Length: 277
Image (cartoon, rainbow, N blue to C red; front, side, top):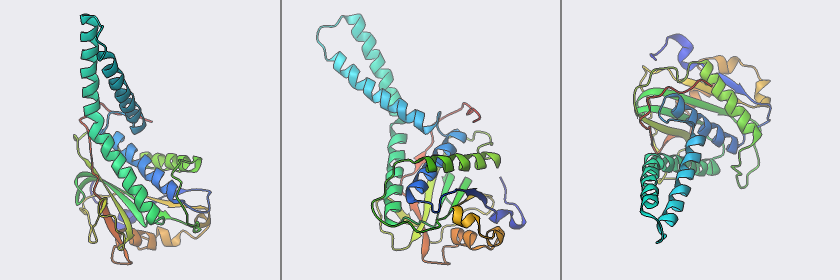
């Protein structure tokens, strides 16, 4: 997708919620749900993440059970060969998904740590491609947090609100043609988040103050708004020079800068087309 003209570069699609605020745990689940959607729709994984996770857990359980069975001394040779063959198949399945699942878990943990420290992150970018500056696809999310929620320990249990917002966001992306391109082979997915420059999570995030990606790419952009902001005038946000667009892309306008997550998801070799949702 090539760069458009005029204000198309700065247009956001609004995703509205009836809540007075967008809690940090909601942001976490929305981002990770969309991340899974992107991987699946761009054929970087063979099934949705929830199904892969269930299959991975089942394979690990089966492998442990087979080890117990094969440890038995009294077993006929044909049956032992059958169990040994199945154990090899299960091990291959575990190896296929092992790195993917570990990286996804590390990315989720890193995002939780950032959100716990900085609940009102300025925005998130998901980049699909060989590198963040030369992407194939870019997905940008701007969060209008609304009423400030009191601090305290963050509960990352997925709520019905988070599920509803995720569904709205994914439907909005599908309506804009996200994931409709042809399969280009395995690639990488990068996560960047905007946070105060004082953020100190070096094991998980690296500062990218001057981050810019290729101008040839027109991103998919979503703006998440709560009830108190839905009632506000849309004039400022529809303006290409609006504060929400500037805040998301201009790292020099405030103390907020981009941080790139060190946990990079590498797609698997998948040649089957995903079913339409």
